[in-house]
Image 1: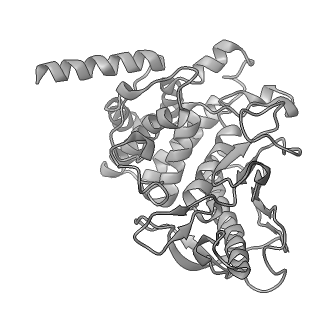
Image 2 (image 1 turned 90 degrees about the vertical axis):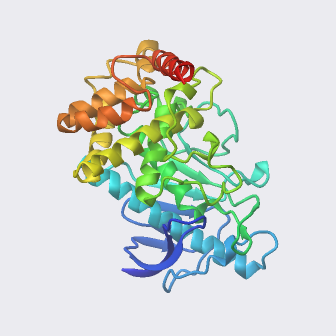
Length: 367
């Protein structure tokens, strides 16, 4: 075991609180760190010494105004922080599922050829990409790409350069996509050859990844640190404790799946709280969600990659049905909570949206 320093979640608009942890390191080089379930590569090279502990200074995220040594410390800290949170997220999913998922590779400092990039995404090998084209091969089982950072964050704390590897919410969210790919497989990539998979995400994928992140951070305002400038009442903040409903669902080819996914994530968060309020451990609900994903992705439910199969995989009601089939004992509490967000069984997303809008209009007219 190796001593390391990482950010642990705290319920505040900050990257977290610095804490010492112990990591079981399988392999280590100056630009590479491998744990049991995850490997991290710094594409810039020479980010950390090859010996000693892993207790690095986050150095305010480094950034262009920091000196070389501060930038190197920030990159080394990012490697360790990303590895820790990805390992923790995978452990959470694998414990609930009772099985392992493919080893996950995280690459930090990607897409420098496109200029400064401060985001993160989960990538599968594809024939083409809608943005940020890849210069080299991608693992068939998926990779997480994180940028080196693009901007300083407005915060009451000292100025911080937003390096995605320092942000546990971004890391956990992208691991959520890895979990979805190897359980529900919403885009049925398992039927496609490795270099022709699709990276398009649907609302259920984005929303489930946000839900996992909220559980792991124990905080509904998962992006509150780096989106502190976005008002809490705006759905783009993606704060799960707000009661977003299907009345705000957009859907369609040009809709943002992150935005629509917030409705699903918010409903799951409400259901989890309702389960806990009823005296049942919330972990039981988490297991129901993950096993529901597995049920959706089972071969019995995936007869082939047809347009109908892809369309049905978008339905919130279908994943809810799979979840309830896993643990019928939670049905009364979970269904009631989900219904309050306009999500019920046996309907398409468009039908749920129209029904929620009709109820909202009736309540408005009644008032």
